Length: 236
Ligand SMILES: NC(=O)c1ccc[n+]([C@@H]2O[C@H](COP(=O)([O-])OP(=O)(O)OC[C@H]3O[C@@H](n4cnc5c(N)ncnc54)[C@H](OP(=O)(O)O)[C@@H]3O)[C@@H](O)[C@H]2O)c1
Image (tube, rainbow, N blue to C red; front, side, top):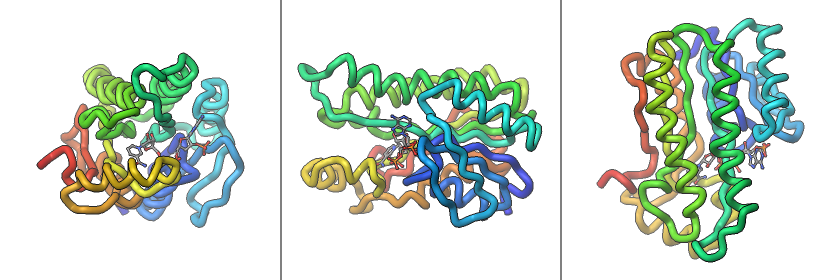
C-alpha cells in the first residue's frame, strides 16, 4: 500500500496509460479522481470518474474546486492527457501545431499552475512525457517537441517546488499498447517495435508501475528526473 490514504488526480484517466495509473494507485490505497471528456466506468470504487476536458482550464478549475470541497487537498497529480498527429515538415498545419501544443503543453502548464493551491507539502507531480523527443520519429516532430517541453518544465518546476517539498518527475513511455498507438499504421508500429531491445511494445500497467514509484515515498529523493519505460529503446 504505497499510496495509503493519499488523494490523487489523474488528468486523462479513462483509457490507456491514464486508466492503468488510476487503477494502480487505487490498488495501492489512494483515493483517485480520474478525468475524461466522456462519462466512463471504473472497476474500483476508489476511482471516481470525473467528466472534464483536459484541454479546458475552466473544466479543470471546477475539478480542483470539487476536490477542495470533498478532500481539501491533493497528494499526487498526474498529467497524462496527450495527443499526437502525424505531420512531416512541409505538411504541418497551424491546426496540428495548436492542437498538440494546446493540450500537451499549454493545458499541462495551466493545470499544474492551478493545482498549486491544492497540492500538499510533500506531494508529487508526475508528468507523462515520451521517448519520442529523444528518437525523433519521422512525422512526429510537433508531438516530439511538445514532449521536450514537458521534460523541460519538470526540471524547472522541480526547482521551484522543492522548497514546498513537492517533487516533480516525468515518466517517458516508449511505444505502449494503447488506443493512441492503435491509431498509427502497421508500418509505424513495426518500425517502432524493431528498435526496442526487449522486442515488444510496453503495456499500460508497466508505465503505471513507474508512475507509482515516482508518486510514492519510494522515490523520496528523486525530483526533476525522467524515467524511461521503453524496453531499452533510448538506453542501450
Ligand atoms: N501509447 C504510447 O505509445 C505512448 C508513448 C509515449 C507517450 N505516451 C503518452 O501517454 C499519454 C496517454 O496516452 P495513451 O497512449 O494512454 O493514449 P489514449 O488512451 O488515447 O489516452 C489519451 C489521453 O489524452 C486525452 N485526450 C486525447 N485527446 C484529447 C483532446 N483533444 N482534449 C483533451 N484530452 C484529450 C484522453 O482523454 P479523453 O478520455 O477525454 O479522451 C486520454 O486521457 C499521452 O500523454 C501520450 O502522449 C503514449
